[in-house]
Amino acid sequence: MSTYILGVESTAHTFSVSVVSSDGRILSNEKSIYKPAAGRGIHPFEASQHHLALAGTVLERAIRESGVGEEDLSAVAYAMGPGLGPCLRVGAVVARTLASSLAVPLVPVNHAVGHIELGCLLTGARDPVVLLVSGGHTMVIAYSGGRWRILGEGLDLTLGQLLDQFGRHAGLASPCGAAVEAAASKSSSYHRLPYSVKGNDVSFSGLLTAAKEKLDAGVSFESVSFSIQETAFAMVTEVTERALAFTGKSELMVVGGVAANARLAGMMTTMAARHSARANLAPVSYSGDCGAQIAWTGSLAFASGVQVPVSDADVRQSWRLDTVDIPWRN
Ligand code: AMP
Ligand code: MG
Image (cartoon, rainbow, N blue to C red; front, side, top):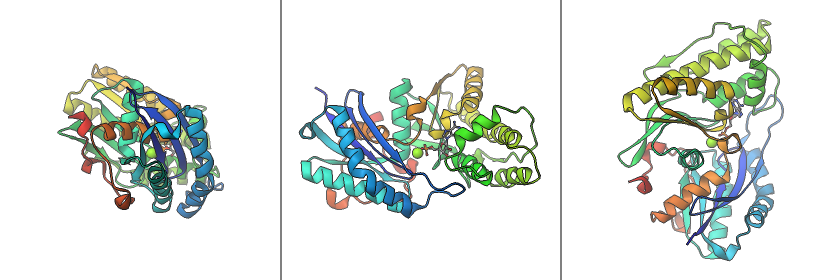
C-alpha cells in the first residue's frame, strides 16, 4: 500500500511544498519564487520574509491539489540544508509545526540529494554520473559505497551564479540563465574568455570578470552570452567526461536549474554518446528547486528509517553532499 509524504523546500529563492506517494507519483508541487529587484542578487532576509508570507498559501494549495487528506500523510520531510540560514529556518518551522500537529515523523533531506533522487525518478536513471548545476551547486557526482561522492566541483562561483551575475551586470533581473540562453542563441560570434579547469574542479571568477569587461568594452550582450556559455559549458563537460571515463558508468544525468539549458544539454548528450552512455536530462519543470525533490527523497529516506526528533530538527547551512549516508541505495 502506498504511503504519502509531504516535502518542504526553502533553501534559497523558492518556497515549495509537494505531496508524493511512496510508489513515485508526484501528486502536487506548488511553489512561489522570491524575485530580487533588477540588478540585485538574493537578499537572504528578504527571501525569508517572502517565504514566511507565502508559506501558508503554498502549503494549503499543495495539500488541496494532491487530493490527500492531512490525516493520510505518513511523514513530513524538509530541506535541512545546505542553503541560506534565514530561508532554511522558515521551512524548518513550517515542517516542525506540521509534523507536531499531525503527530507524524519528521524527515531531514539534503537539498543536493533531492535534486539527484528526483532526477533519477523522472528520467529512469539508476546509477548515473551526475552533473548538478544550479544557483547553489556545481558538482560532478557518482554513487559509491553508501554515499554520493564528489568527483569535481566549482571552486568559487556556481554555474548558476556565473550566469546570474553576468546577466545582472547587463541590467537583467535574477535569475538570468534563461535570458542569457535566449541571447546566446542569437549569436555565433565567439570572443575568447578564460577557461579554468584545475584538476577536476572548475573556477568561474576570472571568466565572469572577463565577460563583464567585454560587455563594458561594447561587445554585444548576445555575443558575450554565446561566449560565456560556450566556455563555461565546455569546462563542465570536460570534467564530467573525465568522471564518466574514470568510473566506467553507463549513464549520465544532468540536474539543477541550469539543466534547463538546451546548449548544455546538447554538449552533454554528444559527450555521453562518445562513451556509449545514456544521457538523462531532468525535465525542465522539475530541474530547478522544488518541493517534489524533498518529498520524494524524504519518502525514500523515511522507508529506510531516517527521521529526526522535532527537538533536534535544526538547519545546516553548510551540509556537504558526501557526508550524507544513503541507506536506500545499499
Ligand atoms: P536552482 O538553484 O536549481 O533553482 O537553479 C536556479 C539557477 O538555474 C539560476 O542560476 C538560473 O539562472 C539557472 N537557469 C534557469 N534556467 C536556465 C537556462 N535556461 N539556462 C541556464 N541557466 C538557467
Ligand atoms: Mg537547488
